[in-house]
Image 1 (spheres, helix red, strand yellow):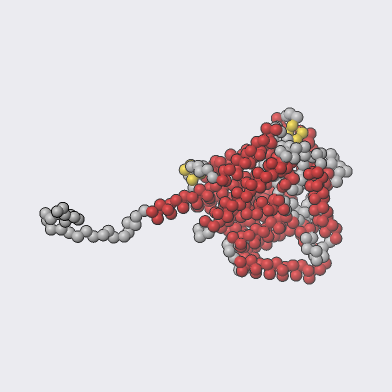
Image 2 (cartoon, rainbow, N blue to C red):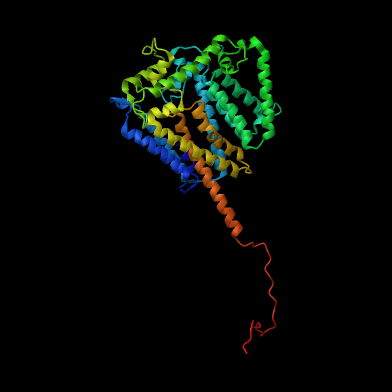
Length: 445
């Protein structure tokens, strides 16, 4: 909403309906039917049901999209918006990271903003070597996406570009200590996808060879890998030849196994999803909401003695976009979400091709690159319908702004081509003596 306000203060307004609007309307239908069938309130208003926050968040995302859609702007403003987005993302990510180590920051910010780490406020000390620093994934992914979008990816691993090289080292380092294999995989996909849209096929081959050399170094490192932080070992567990701590590998493998088992349990029974066709909406009982808040604040008395799988099921955290979508809006909502993401992907490809020779092409890539991988990443690796997809819907507004610029540029190019060329000299007219009229083309006999 702040982004839309910033743009609308300096630009004219217009609106042009296209398939991006259709994609958003599909999501309004999916969320709308879920709310009509399963209305929810907010805990501070009282009542028997809670869970209304996602409805409000989706409503704000829809409003932001359509507000941005009316904006007539130019690429200079797009550049400013992208830079502000990067700065805000980094600020939020570092706030989470610092609050995990410094309880004072968490206590100071909590009254006005919930985007902090609550563990420190409960006296939980962070041991980087033996624990996962969850906030590291936010910092690493924010830095990584900005670097591989704004600059050619291979320059970010080239020491002769020190700023980019140090930034990429920090991105990889933060993601490694977080222990999130999915986020590390996402950064790798961003890296290669950015080279693909830039048509850097040879550099993709070179990057693949560098990845092979890195794997060889990991293989030759042997048991030295066990001295790495716990999060880094968890990420390396995907390599069968990496000699990491056996407990770390077993823990990582079990996290995948219980996730698949949880999906099977949710989708094959009626205990957790009553209506798989249209979903159960976002509403939950107020008691369950308070239990979730207790868990967030570190009070685990309610889940004492429960397995991790049972705890996740109790909170409604399914660690899978398809299962979470079916839980809230059903198979109907999942199909509409896939259609919308397909439309977003198609427009992202068109925009990347159109702005290829533009000086701010890297900023266009920053906006469009996530839309190229979202449908596959969400379905095959990890995604959240309750949080992450809301951001996808809101950011689709930037696709609409870029498409409006594209259409306007094409119209201006056609108008310029159709206009007469005033630079060409006029055909001279042969002069006639005074009083002499031009000879008629035909004479009557």
